Amino acid sequence: MITTHAPGFRRGSVSKALPRSVAALLLSGWLLGSAAGACLAEPASEAQRRPESEQTSEQGGGAGADPGPPVALAPERPIPVFDLTADSLGGSGPAWPEPDGSCYVYERYVVIAWGSPDPQPVAIVRQRDSEDSGAADCSRDSLAGDFVLRNEWAEYFSGMWGDLLLVDSGTGDIRSLILYDVPARRKVLELEGAGETDGWISEHTVRIWMLVATDLPRAVCPDIPEMLGVGVDSLYALNLETLRLTPLGPWRCHALQ
Image (cartoon, rainbow, N blue to C red; front, side, top):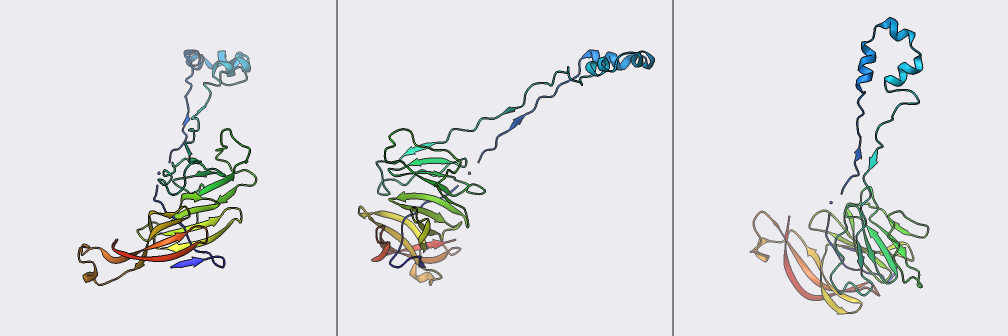
């Protein structure tokens, strides 16, 4: 099913999915020395005659006590950075994001995306300064002016094309492709049943397979195993400037889980 969110708009491209690490606290115990044990062995009358501050110091408490080794925090891992300034979706799609986040540098945007976008965002899209020729800002924290896309239903970063953020959505083999207009900060297209892309027709038009039928008679696709459902994909041309989807004719069988 094709859902448009603005007059004249239609659709985009696709990806796949998923893993995360956790920082550990290293806590060191501190044992009392033999002096403390000797103190506990003294007769009560002797201990009572000694100053309270001296007793406290010997037992490991008080202002003069050694607090023990400091707590060590595991450092945050550096974020992987992928330079896509000279690339488009016509090349290979972006590498799948790391669970702790990956940074994708495009000509006009920086995208910080997570492979496990819960509770992290799906992506933070940050516009680059036109004069910026230095290192891109890949901070994992959102900044003023960033477009932050939160996870709603198993959504994953799939790429950028111009001002369009492409998001893959779903957990099974029937997935959706969602496009967001970053400057307008809104969804402009959602395609249910979007499959993989199949090359470019022009610099702004890509071929894409779309699931168009399910629960078909097994005779249509006899090579699909009995335990799987029968579906059919059709090949479409997707214009990323006009967001229009045009059928191209070829079709193929699609085994459904």
